Length: 335
Image: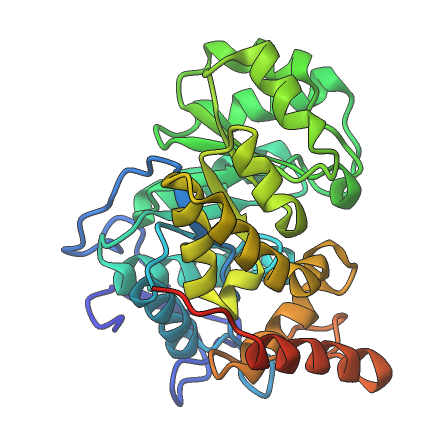
C-alpha cells in the first residue's frame, strides 16, 4: 500500500512484508492522491496500536490492517502513535513511516490524528511540521516528556508547537501518566491560539469536565480520554471518546457513543456496565500490554510490544484473558 511513496533507506529496522529496512517517505509527496478529512472531534477515536514483527521491527502492513478494520467497524477518527501506539518506543524515522502508512490506508475516510510526544519543544515542533507535510489531519500534542514543566514552560511549549503548523491540535491532559496537569489558567491563556481546538481529558476526576466547561464555555471540544470514565465524560459534555479498548471491541464502543448521542441512556448504561471490567485496564500501568492482548484474543492484532515493555505473563495474563473471554460470552446485542 505504500507503493506511491518516494523513499530513502534508513538504518532503522522496520518490517513491511519481508523488508527489513525503514523506507522514509519523502514528506513532500507522502500523501499521494489521498484527500484528508478535517476532524470535527465527535464520536469514537481509538488510540490505535502499532504492530510489530517478531524481531520488534514495525510491521507496517499489519498496522495498516488494524487501522482499516477499525474504520470498517465504524469509528469516527484514528489516533496513531499515542500512548497505546507506543509513540515513545519509536525512532523519528519510524514515526514518520507509520504516519505515512496510516495516511495512505485511511485515504481520507476518517481523520488521522497523530501523537506529538517528544522530549523537547524544538523536536515536537519539527515533528508537527513533518506530520503536516506527510498528510496528518490533526495533532494530539503532549507536554514534553521526562521533564515536568512549570506552567509558563507548558504554555510556551504548546504555543511553539501550534505556531509550527496549521493543523488543528488536541491537547492531551493526563496527570497520572505524565505528572503534569494542564491547568485551566493555561487553557485560558491558550484561547487566542486558533488551531488549538480540543482537549483530550484523561484526569480521573470527572468534575474536571464541568470545571472546564464553566471556565471555558465552548472554546474547546472536550474528549473523554480515560476509558473507565468515558460515559461520565460524554454525559458531562464531551463530544468524543479517545479509547484504548476500542481496539478490541470497536462495534460496542461505537454503539455506546451513538446511544448517548440519541439520548438512549438505558442502552448506553447497559453497554458501559458490560464493558467496565475491561475499561479499567486503560487506567493500569500495563495498559498497552493488556489492550494488545485483548486485541490478539479478538483476532484484531498482535500482542507484541517493544521492550522494555514485555507481554503479559503469569497470573496477570490469566486475569486479563479471563476478562476478555467473559466479555465475549456476555457480549450485548447491538444494532
